[in-house]
Amino acid sequence: MRILLSNDDGVHSPGLVALYEGLRGLGDLEVVAPDRDHSGASNALTLNRPLTVEQHPNGFRSVDGTPTDCVHLAVNGLFDVPFDRVVSGINTHANLGDDIIYSGTVAAATEGRHLGLPAIAVSLANEGLFHYETAARVVRLLLEHNRPLVLGPRSILNVNVPDVPWDELKGFRVTRLGRRERAEGAVPMTCPRGKERYWIGAAGEGGDAGPGTDFHAVREGYVSITPVHVDMTRHEALVPLDEWVDALPDGFGGQV
Image 1 (cartoon, rainbow, N blue to C red):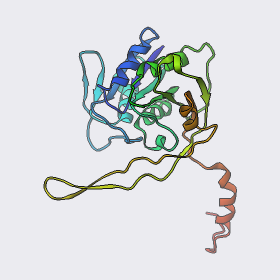
Image 2 (cartoon, rainbow, N blue to C red):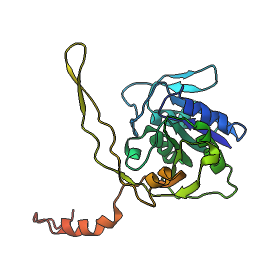
Image 3 (cartoon, rainbow, N blue to C red):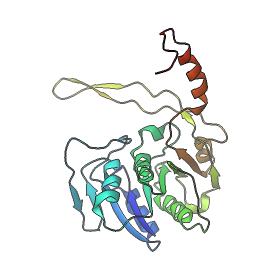
Image 4 (cartoon, one colour):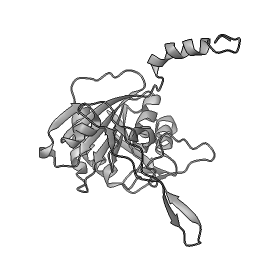
């Protein structure tokens, strides 16, 4: 098995190193990650300049671009031998509910899926204890499963692991994405040159965080495993929307 590892926290992130160490011996591992923290980059792709790739003494490669850039380059040009799957992480903080819209960790996994590879995004629900080895062991267990998992096209697994020692995990739960409350307001500040600047406010708490959600599973001490489908079409709205468009008073009747 040939596995591409990436992340959004940067090539020197302890979570990425822990993931690499935790998967040693499982297959041929290659690491291509951003040269700096790109948390919140989502699926951004750099199209306005060329990208630089550097190889580090530990064999890891860094790219002066986004997580999506890293996976795209790795799969589409940096290596002659194809990969079997992509694993993105271990993210320093949880990616629950709405977080996945912004997450560069999830974006790296979805880019792998767009390029035809099974992919997993893994994050640590950080409580300040940094049990990355627990999350790495979770990923290894998933990859060593003797039954192949077929999720269908454009789907990945989003995995969130409680920040506890391995023997304190309660188990695994298959979950749906919860939903956060509205984010906190932007925080103004004044820079040394006297100009007003703003910090983006902190994410809201879990608004939809009851049983069955990823929030609830992690809070109860379980690994949350959520199948994420990248098709953002709201299919159940197609028929009522079509009827609404047909009724537009523009003479076209919804037809072109």
